[in-house]
Length: 159
Image (cartoon, rainbow, N blue to C red):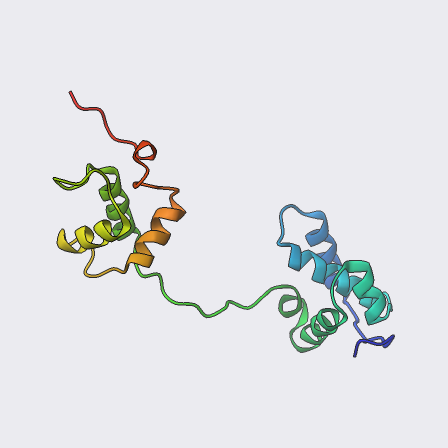
């Protein structure tokens, strides 16, 4: 596989045009561009190892790209399939409610919000049926909120 062997990649005129447009176009994921470059060089008759060296991929990746092209054309070779993942724990409305809660003053007797306190309060106020601390922590991190650092929370003026 990784030696000087060549793999037969024959791009149609339309596929060549599609690759050219992709490479000339705007923002594309780096992986997609590298695969496109690799396919183009394979189609020019270069060996797997040479292509890998030119493009900065491993010979195995170049070979796998050629195999995916053989199996499913450009679409399969260039783009990644959707990876299975877990559903989002909170919907957009629930996330907004928790963020709004963070921006509100903490409960009586508390100086500031903590992740644990937010989690308990969100369930107590029925903003969400249930939620874990890690889910709340990641939500805060994604909004760059650090309520435990008092200066970092924006509060509306009163009066």
